[in-house]
Amino acid sequence: EEVLRLDGLRKSYNVGQPNEVEVLHGLDLTIGRNDFAALIGPSGSGKSTLLNVIGLLDRPTRGELYLLGQATSGMDDSGRTALRGSSIGFVFQFHHLINAFTAIDNVLMPLMLTHGKPDQQAREKALELLAAVGLEKYANTKPNQLSGGQQQRIAIARALITEPALLLADEPTGNLDTQTAAEVFELFRKVHRDRGCAVLLVTHDPRLSATCDRTINLVDGRIVSDTVNEPG
Ligand code: ADP
Ligand code: ADP
Image 1 (cartoon, rainbow, N blue to C red):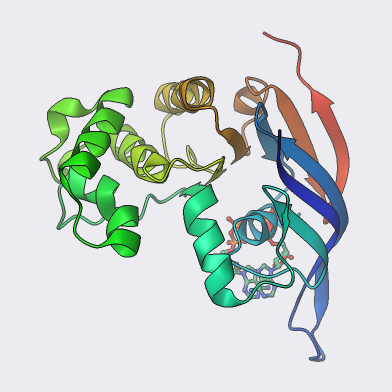
Image 2: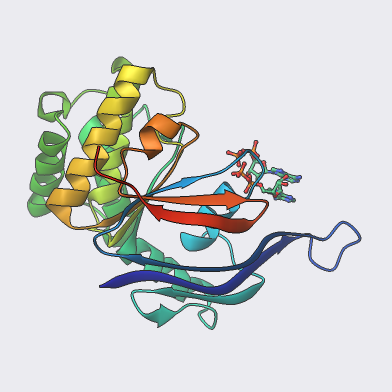
């Protein structure tokens, strides 16, 4: 099942200004439900820009982006926000958890934004997700009392509460030590397997990208290779 398709996607910054610059030069890419893919490439190659465009946080300049078969270029902002909320989960390098809230309330946050005060069913789902990431004991703990790896696990649970078809992660292990980073990668793998969502992860670490099933290499705003990795 196709989750995402890019067709001739281009992105420029500062459009119409003297410093206009195109950073994504006509990308074609298809991501399916069963993809567990790494997006790699040098700093400045356009990885974050691409993730922001795929995540409907930013608009492409030209070309088309299909999410779950729906063309997005004609959608207005509210349509894009609704589609983002129902189909995409985000995990960032810096998890953006709210330290004034408990772990479970952080996980519930995306639902609060769309549905208001969470009901008992929503709380049970959040607890089930905290259990899935190994943190059920810490449901009522504030994030800043937990380790970096545990905080990133909360961010993953939060990204899953809306049951997204596509989970996007921008350097999710960028500020974790090697061992913890490997564990968080294992958790993404488990989430992919158990929840059936496509996963696209940006990483600088070739050892981590090698653990993914597919590696997409972006250089200077172009996909220079897209390969299936041998199971290690
Ligand atoms: P990566 O994530 O691979 O490091 P980025 O997507 O952050 O790459 O950046 C790609 C290029 O786009 C870089 O040359 C960067 O300087 C430029 N860029 C990123 N964001 C902006 C912006 N808001 N305005 C202008 N240029 C930008
Ligand atoms: P990353 O490599 O993770 O993309 P960067 O340090 O390149 O991080 O970018 C951090 C932020 O600065 C991003 O929000 C990006 O859009 C913005 N940015 C990067 N390059 C430029 C630029 N040339 N002009 C304006 N904003 C930029």
